Image 1 (cartoon, helix red, strand yellow):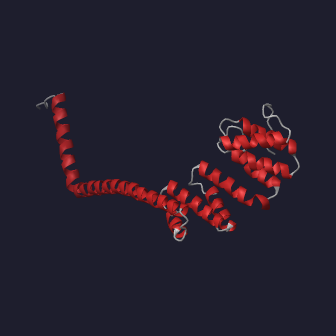
Image 2 (cartoon, one colour):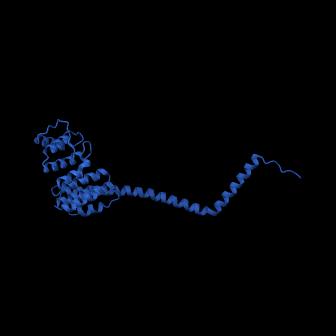
Image 3 (cartoon, helix red, strand yellow):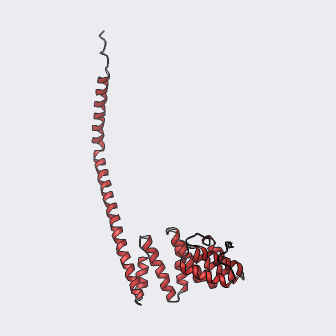
Length: 232
């Protein structure tokens, strides 16, 4: 019986390539339309996403301009449309625009002696995890400042304790409120030490440092001392 020829590596490779080509042809026959549709959907989605991004940028730019106009109108004493405009801008998809609109809306409420609404707005910002922490901390300080006379001193101290540390971005503002709460508790020495610590902190705005140095001195605390109080 004749023996089959020995299968060379070249022959095996050719058969394998032909098999792969046939499989690929059959695959495209079966799924080609689906693949083309998938590519078209992907391209459409990509184009749509790019358009959406550009649209969002243009929309945010327009909202920033609207916000600037509201600020200008309020500065000129025209507040007739400001509240409605700010309420609309507070729904913006831009975090910066939304936060700015809410802060401005709270300021308008305070101007109208509507402290309840202002506190509610500040609280909503402080509790909103979508905002950067700096915005939330600023809102918490503003909320506490507005509520200060209605809060127990220890509540003020406890609420602001995470921010009342040297080197923290809001140390000056939070520290002042905390020190005032200490004074209401009769803790003049602790309050004086905290005012002195604020005055020594180079990261605190100069007006707050100057004011704190003056108050610390009136409480008999040397601003040049190194001892720093601990918020309780």
